Structures are given as C-alpha cells and as structure tokens.
Image (cartoon, rainbow, N blue to C red; front, side, top):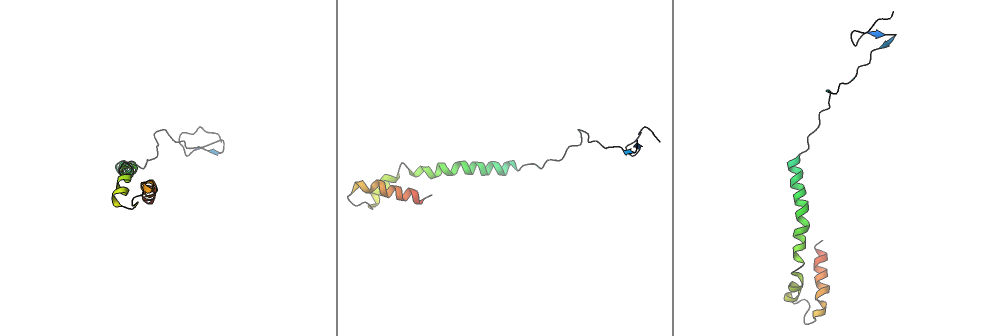
Length: 87
C-alpha cells in the first residue's frame, strides 16, 4: 500500500519517514566564565612584568651587600646566581 506521508509516523514505500533537524533546533552552549578567565589572563600577563623589575637594580644590590668583597668582577656572576634562583 502506497500512501503519501501526512505525518512523520506514516510509512512510504515500506520505509519509515526520517525526522530532520530544523535549523531552529540548536544545541545549548555552555557559557565560558569570561570574568574568571579575564582575571587569570591578567595575572598571567602581570607576573613576568613583576619578575623582570629586579634586573635594573640587581647589580647595585650585589655590590651593596658585600658578597663580592673588593672584586667588582664577581658582580655579574653573583647577580646571575640571584636572578636565576628566582625562577
């Protein structure tokens, strides 16, 4: 028996009718926590800036603490040790 399918449940040529998804049937998206992510990105960007503030002052710090004694040539070595130990 051949009939025209008036509804989705009727059969045409022995094949069940196929349901199609409309373009209005959209999946719900899970919203991103934009505020929290923005705060994390800001902290991630500010941390390297704060860590690099020591560079202009490290040589003077090494000289004033007296680690090098009277040998100014060791200033670079000790400054490198201090900077490297911070990371």
